[in-house]
Amino acid sequence: MSKRGKPWQFIVMLVLIVAFAVTALFGVSYQYGDTKNVYIKGAADIRFGIDIRGGVDVTFMPADAYDATSEQMDAAKTVIEDRLVGLGITDYEDYVDYNKDRIIVRFPWKSGETDFNPQTAIDEIGTTAKMVFRKGSDVTGEEILSGEDVTSATPGYDETNGYVVQLKFSAAGAKAFADATTELAGNGTISIWLDDKSVSVASVKSAITDGNAIIEGNFTLDEVTTLSNQINSGALPFALSAESFSTISPTLGAKSLDVMVMAGLIAFALVALLMIARYRLPGTIAVISLLGQACATLAIVSGYLTIFPGSTLTLPGIAGIILGIGMGVDANVITAERVKEEVAKGKTLDGALASGFKMGLAPIIDGNVTVVIVAAILMGAFGPTDGLWATVFKPIFYWFGPSTAGSIYSFGFTLLTGVLLNFVFGVWATRVMLRGASRIKALRNPWLYGGEKKHENA
Image (cartoon, rainbow, N blue to C red; front, side, top):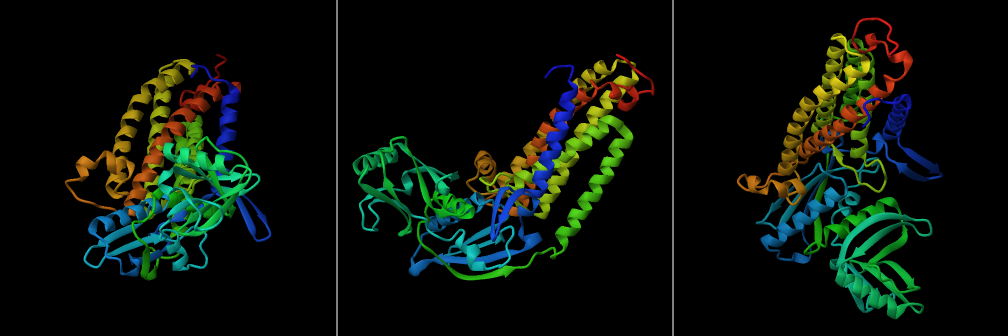
């Protein structure tokens, strides 16, 4: 980064942050009749936790009186956890009753849910998802490969076929698929079956040897997301049957979200006024950065781009967003105070900015790195048992036994997200805008940076 900024840097960064904030808050979609195409998800598309919006309580048992072992019950629980997290559902509770072969799962409603049908919610996670590729279009066709040969499945969009699932095969799977498509090229078909139900039949036009394939079938975005998630999480070791289910009312009340949003807006406005009053131009730029940081956190939680599932926002998760913004305020205050001190010492504006940025960086990094470690530990302790952070800290958590609580995981997730984004907005974006603003003649008065009111031509 250059020591002296350019005026256009301030203007471009300002426009980008404002444009991003608008899209992150309101989203981008197109309504045609009853069909709504969402291109960018907004705050309204966030999936809220059980405490804010309520959800479903369901008891799963092995179907057809299957006598599952404890290891199989644990494996089924892990697959359910993977599917929940793959769908962006991080606020969940799941328990295994080994004596009665039961798995009790509680998770929140989808964003935008209006029917509140528990069976629809259960279908998101309850199927076995055994995938098989067969020659021809009949269930008795020769098996080419299975879901075990798929290394990844991701939602995608094809201009010809619409929403599709993009598959990548293992080395063995790629060879088997290449051999089959070479044999059937020009005069055969390949069908894809999920739990013995045909989901796609395609004519083989040429050999496919790159280890990739797509599943097409007039899918919606939700359908390809769910299908990709089920394939990635793997098949359940046995079929599950929902023996009982019920709806869960929001523990905080139906109007709690409106109250929290209003309180957040009032708090942000008061912080903005205080920052501007005390630090003038650096305070104003800090408010712009904080707006970008807050909206970027919401964008990551909502999923922003439709190919990402997003996360679940609980009340502790909202607390994590607030604490992350607080860390952003702290970073901007440190920077503004250092610049103000350097200006008061009589340094030139450019010198004061350079010294202020240099002296303020170390304490910002120290404070934020500490919080990153705490957030990662919380995500490991209260997240999926086979998740990234749970695996990293497994030697520590092993002594305390399993503990999964999605609401606390949401706190760790939003806190970690907010702190990492603080380096982007509170450190990098703030400094780019301050350097750019300092090159605009009308904004070079030292008073705007906390010094005495006088004119400077330098």
